[in-house]
Length: 167
Ligand SMILES: Cc1cc2nc3c(=O)[nH]c(=O)nc-3n(C[C@H](O)[C@H](O)[C@H](O)COP(=O)(O)O)c2cc1C
Image 1: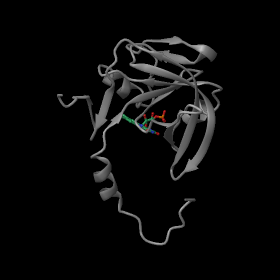
Image 2: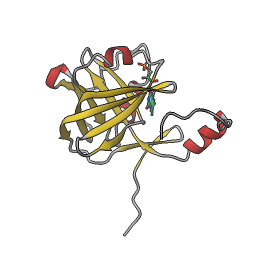
Image 3: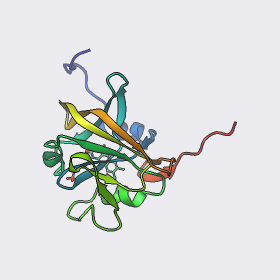
Image 4: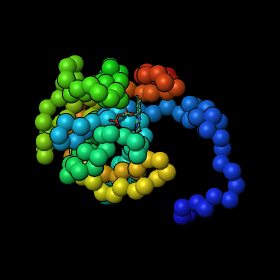
């Protein structure tokens, strides 16, 4: 399956957004040296061997030009009580790493956020132009687990928590 050559009309934007609104996702903040970072729900695992993960970043992102220079970056998996952090890292023109954000320098001067469910330390593996986004693939070189194990979720513009079926 290669890049599709368009023959038939694609779905209209509103119907596309409505369908995506039925999808829930975990929330991550991707951080890099120079104190850059942005919130993303497009994170997913890609491969176990080698260990690869991916996220998509908009071509319009003002963070991406700095993040793409990173020799190492971190995917911070937000915990259920970190909705405020998610919002902070999606707003332009503020110091995203200022209080109440709490972080520590990791390997390669990569900022690691405190209080997360987990983080994955990655080296850039591939970056592919994909429509109006970049598809960024990272090779996971290390991971860390936080004590809050429950991840933050995002669905139809709202943050929430996973509520498992009983039994
Ligand atoms: C819950 C949530 C999920 C987001 N997911 C993504 C994403 O997957 N990719 C992306 O490029 N932007 C995503 N954004 C938007 C970016 O966080 C935000 O637009 C961006 O950080 C704007 O600032 P920038 O110019 O520094 O990129 C998301 C925002 C929120 C609130």
